[in-house]
Amino acid sequence: MMRTSFPLSSALVLVLGAALAAQEDGDKKPDPEVQAKIKEFEKAIADRKMERDQEAVGMIDELLKNYADLHEKDQRSFIKALDKVFKQRPRKPENQGLYKATVTALGTIGGDVPAKILVSAYKNKAFDDDEWLSFREEILENIGLTKDERQIDFLLDRATRDPVDGVKRGAGKALRHFRESDQKVRKDIFSKLLIDDARTGGAAHRSLDPGDAVAQPRQRTLKAIADPWNETLSALSGAQHRTAVDWQSWWNDNKHEDWK
Image (cartoon, rainbow, N blue to C red):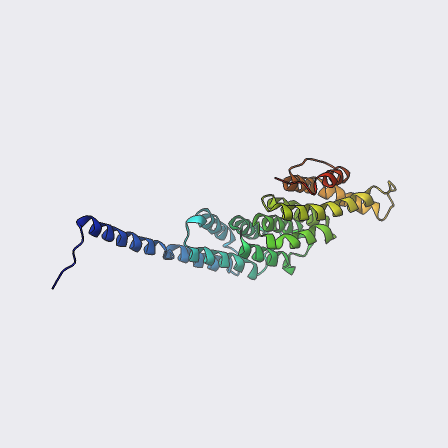
């Protein structure tokens, strides 16, 4: 019987290749320690007395710090666990630490799934009261941080249609995170914000009468949104202006130009 022989160098290559493949397969397995930590996190957030919230925040920080090195299954498990935070007994407004750590983690991770979780959290009726306004702004900010362009319309709706000044401010500010999007996307965001900015500014300056039922609320709105919206318009366009009139003039001259 004939035996097929390989040169020593070829045999060594095959052996090393098999060893590397085995090592890679090993690297692709979820880490049992990470899975155990995630399960412990889920137990902590489900504590009926909410006495483990601070411990849970520490777990979020630790897992987030090493997130990029986690196996993709571990990453998915972590994201699912973060989603479960909003399905537990509602915390009180003075006890927002776990919620804030969770939305920050989701915004930092980014992508479509964390963005959907954040939108769902924003719509959670547990956060409707005024005491949660600053937290709702944080949710909006982190939706922007995910850079999920499918949520642009959601942010634009909050920025241009919501009657609450803090929401308008937060949503408009969050849109600055799309500064790296295609210029068609950036121009669309810019134009819609500018229209509402001009409308608000026009109503705010129509009268100095302190009893004007339209002008006074719009003046408060304009004061709330002016700086953060200017920051967003600048981030999207690369230009620098301070008033809706100046932005409108710049837009008229540059809407068909290349925004590099």
